[in-house]
Image (cartoon, rainbow over all chains, first blue to last red; front, side, top):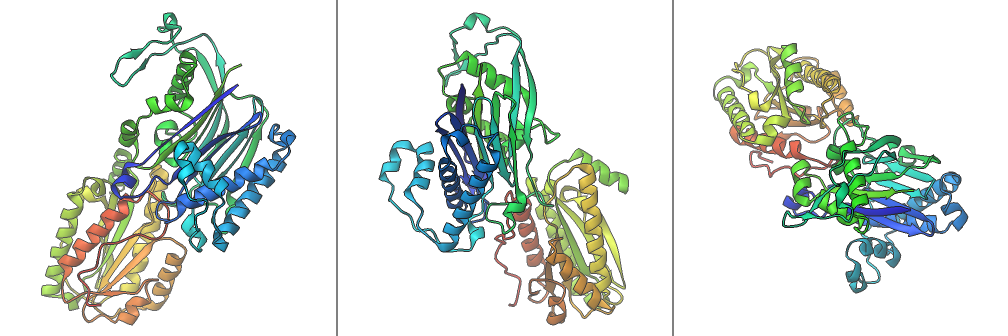
Length: 309
Length: 217
C-alpha cells in the first residue's frame, strides 16, 4: 500500500528577490490509484504559479473523467491516460489564452494541498490575466500509479524516478525531534542494524534542457507536444519520486541520472521505523528549509510515494 | 594556455556566464578615450572580483579592434582577470573583430560541454567610436543571424563619433550611445549587469538590467 507525501521549500534566491515559491505539487488519490503532479513555474514569467495551478487542475480533472477501470490500470491503459494528460494541457492553454476565470476546482486542488482550512476563504473565481501564454510558463511532471502499475509524463526539467527495493533485513533509524533529542521508534531494539536493502532504479525520466543551463521547456510552449515525454511501467516499484530541478543537486548523483541511494535508504528505513508518521512530515524532517537553502537557491519541491508488500 | 583553461574548468565546475568585450582600440581612440577605456576596464575587473558569486561564474574574453582584430586576453574566470594594457592605433576592423568574438564563443561552449560545465547564454559587448574600416556588412549580418538563433546576446555601445546606424546593424537591440567618455560608468553598469546575469536561475530571455546612467539617449 502506497504512502504518499510532499514538500515544497521556497528558494532563498526567490525569497531575497521578493518572489513567491513558484513550484507546485499535488498529491491525490483516485480510487485505488494515486496521482502526483509537480510543476516548476518559470522564474520570470509573472503568472507562472497560476499557470501551474491551471494545468495541474485541468489535467487532474481530465484523468478523473476516465472510467475507474482505466485509472486503476494506468500502464495497461497508458494511451488513454496520455490522451487525458494532453487534453488537460490543451484545455489549460485554451483557458489561459481566452483569459477565462479559473474554475474553483483547480484552485481548491492546489490550496487544499497547502493551506487546507484557509481554502474556504478564497473567492470562487479569480480572473486570469490576458495572454501571452508564456507569462504562465511552467514545467509539468505527472505520475499516475497503482500497486503494480505506473504511468508518467514529463515536460521540461525536473526528474522522475522509480526504484525497486528489496528487503535484506529490517533496519531502524533514529530521528531527532526539534530539540535534538532522539525519538524512539517502536522497534528500537533493531536500531543499530546496518543498511539492509538492495535498490534498483527501474524508471528514469531525465530533465530536458535547452543549450543553456537556464533553458527548459514548458506546457505553454508552442512546441510542447514535441517535448512531452511519457512512459509506463508494469513492473512493481516501491519508491517513486517526482522533483523540480531545485532538488536535483542533492537528490540526483553527479552522473545526472541516478537517485542518491543514501537518501532512498534513509527514507525507507525511517518510514518503516515510524509507520505512523506522515511521509510529508518525514520529508520535512529530512529536508528542512535551512538544509535545502544550504544546497540550492532555487525553489525545491518533492512528491514522493513508498509502498511495502 | 589551453591547459590553463582545462584546469580552470576542472577546478571550478560552477555554471558559467561567458562574456566577450570587443573593444575599439583604433587610432581615433588615442588620448583620453583610450585612457578612460582602460580605467573603465580596471573598474570592471575590480567589481567582478569583489562579488564572490560573479567572480566564480563570469568568464571574460577581450577582443581588441584596432589595426587588426586580436584576442588580447583569453578566457579567464573573473576572479583571475587582469585587464590587458590597451594602445590606440590603426583602423577599425569591427567586422573581423565580432567574427572572431563569435568564433571564440562557440569554441568556448564546446570546451564547457567537454568539461561538463553548464553555461548561460553568452553576452557580447561591442564598444566602438568609429565607422568600421573593413568589409563589415557580411559580418554584421552573420552576427545578427547568430543572435537570432540564440547563440548569444549582443550589446552594441556607440562611443561619440560612431555611426549609430552601422552599430545598430550588428545586433538585434539598438545601440546605446555613450555620454562623452563615461567609460567608468559604462563598465560599472556592465559589471553590475553581468553580476545579475550570472545569478539567473530561471529560464526566460528577459532580464532586468540596472538603469543606464552612461548614455546620452
